Length: 93
Image (cartoon, rainbow, N blue to C red; front, side):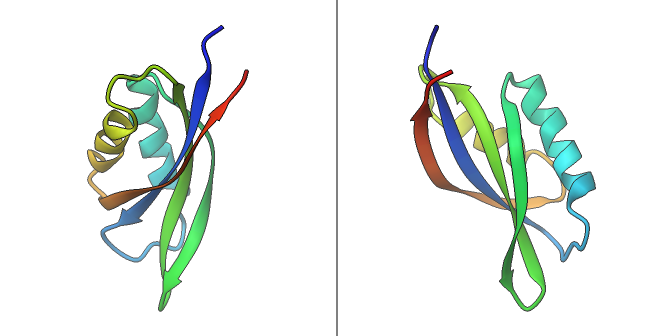
């Protein structure tokens, strides 16, 4: 069985959001279309009430472009302004 990679990708919304659930549902749909699994997510306080969301994305280790395709998929959601890769690690399944 091929090894998998867990990438923590921080997504920054374009506007202040109190409830991230709807945003995460849209992101999850886009990731699922591209063949990625969203393991979990958590809101992260940035400053002055602005929050980002950390997305824990599972992808195949042999992904040709690394996390770039997942990043582009997340950025394709209208409410997302920018993304950063926070952490990447290899996991066994």
